[in-house]
Length: 163
Image (tube, rainbow, N blue to C red; front, side, top):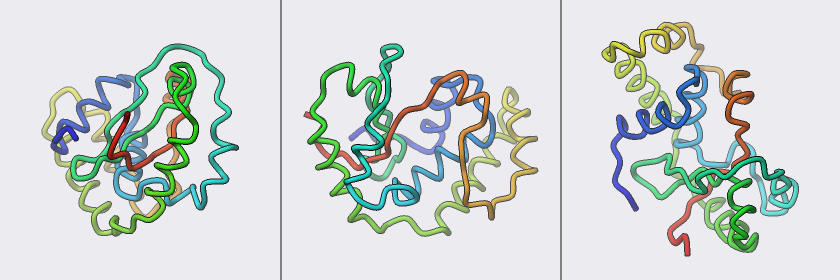
């Protein structure tokens, strides 16, 4: 697994999605901290989730945690490159066994994010959005802009072996 620091993770997300809003960074950290446990309860749900239509070639895997091999798996790209759906189910079974992401870690990630944005001269607009964010809101969704611009169709999975 690549060893990425918190800053590398944030900068990669900003570079991949330059029109993102603060809430989209919160979504990244939420997924990085809790994995898919906030929406995926069993592997049967994967059949419903794996219905994305191919719109354009995209990167398949985006590492979203610097401690664990936790990835956003882009379902459009996964399907485009004819990857086996059975692997998604295998990874989901592994991921669902995780219980390593306490709420305190998420709050610390939000603190680190605000600190990073405050000290970055080109990201003041994101910092200004962030200081208004209610961190007790556990219903974290991508912004309308992010959804419109990037059409995110992915699932968050722990992947030790991408072969």
